[in-house]
Length: 137
Image 1 (tube, rainbow, N blue to C red):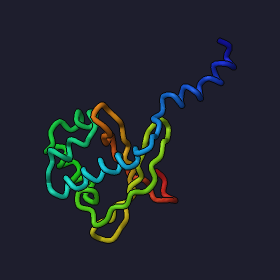
Image 2: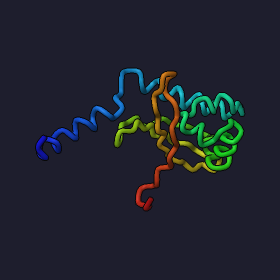
Image 3: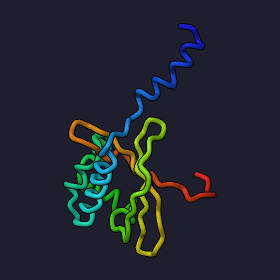
């Protein structure tokens, strides 16, 4: 294969490897995230842990360790005063749900939830803070 042909075929390979949104995926993704947030509110760590991807479960091997990480590292997600679902998008081969959480001090925090689909449905594969506009990451 000539170099030019290879370069032209790369964008197609990326498209094939990227997740593809289907009708209903947005509802399913929001349901998983919402269920995990509800589980945190009820301190049901087993259920909250069940919405995490296998990779996250390997990083935090018990529901208690996972719960402590969220409670201490992401208090605005552990006990939000408000939650808004923003856009669901594909970016760099990843499916990301943008979320806005309000904390007890009235501040808003943006996060991207990376979602992965497995045999049992969508799971949360990471939660990444979104820097405020104008701030360097």
